[in-house]
Amino acid sequence: MIIPWQDIPPETLENLIEAFVLREGTDYGESERSLEQKVDDVKRQLQRGEAVVVWSELHETVNIMPRSQFHE
Image 1: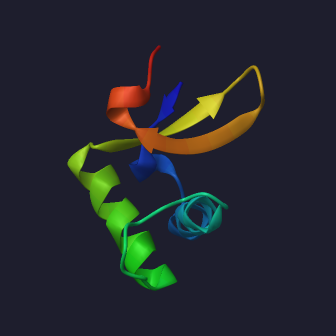
Image 2 (image 1 turned 135 degrees about the vertical axis):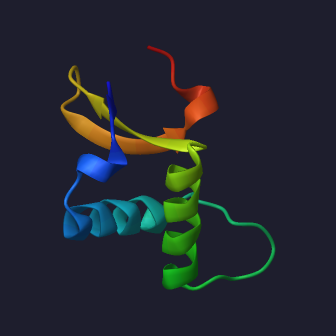
């Protein structure tokens, strides 16, 4: 289920995005970027609708993923 990012309290959204970008295996290319830059990138992707916040009822987890990878 997609959770509208606008409905998530700002502090919670910030923590969710930080946890997402800090996960092992998250790759941002050849150049090293700061945590703040990575968080800003994800926020822009959410605002443009390129990424979505997804709740898995089965696993009781929340995740951020590209909209193109989300299958209802």
